[in-house]
Length: 448
Image (cartoon, rainbow, N blue to C red):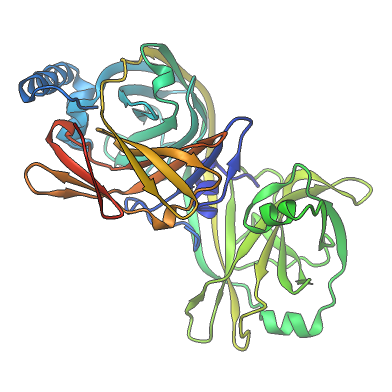
């Protein structure tokens, strides 16, 4: 079983994703797509209004001269399309045509709009999910299908990556090596498992698991590492084979309690690509219960020892403070009907990052201090020094000259060394020349 980057972000909102140089937290708050789990991110100028108008007009005229961009005016919105740098670069392989329609970037991120069209079959649908793809020079990608036209079999995808200013004026290579489609969702899957009965009758057999290099999500793994714990116990593998209704790509291979936590071990079909899911607890009335949870990926070698891998996923739930009387275990799972590999590749020059509205502003939060704020068409960025970042206590509003107030759909936080940048992103672009001021937790920030 493999998780794509989007699912990991959603499944572990606000958890740190460690890369060699960056700590990146992403908190999905977007209403564009329904939540996939119970734990559920996704330019502008300080110049005259006349100059802004000319900028908008020139981009708009350029866009309407390109059929693909003209079409996306209605797929996405006229406001977004008018700000896109027209690209119109295509690549065709396996009877599937990819087209990079347009792009926009600022200091923190780059956004690219791409279409995929199956010219010979039905391998593309509204559940299209890019599996192996990249924008050279950017990092921490997310993407979403913003439109699917069944008649033409064209999916339009918005791809977002960090590292906007690093692409400034450079030739960018965009590629797709594989994608998934024809997903099938299973929700409220009845496991017929009563956690209280398991607790009362099961004595768990365990195996040691080395946390060094372990993969997974949730708060348990970083908490254990912070405490200096290098080995924990997991359930012994393959003690049962409990299949769930309608699910043939995984089964429960063990269940029990370790150190007061409920462990559910699953084994996934070896040929599955990005099949995934999770469990959740409901009370006697069917209401979902909130509880801290984590998951760990691993495999077993020929000697029965744990090793790095994704064949097994062990879900761990902290239920010590829950009344388990009448509680049942339900599941949510996703499988992919098609996995398509190919070589779709093109390149284009990313236009320079345009000037943004910027201001120094010292704002104290619970765990860090911001000293800088900027506004671009892609959103609002707060920067400062931070040991850790809590996104729950930050509220941003942008007040426009016409009296309207702009709010945000999602937020991405990046930290390099102790320098933190939090970007609040909107699905609709901001007219920076029309921004009056910004409030951060009620504090007014005025741009000079």
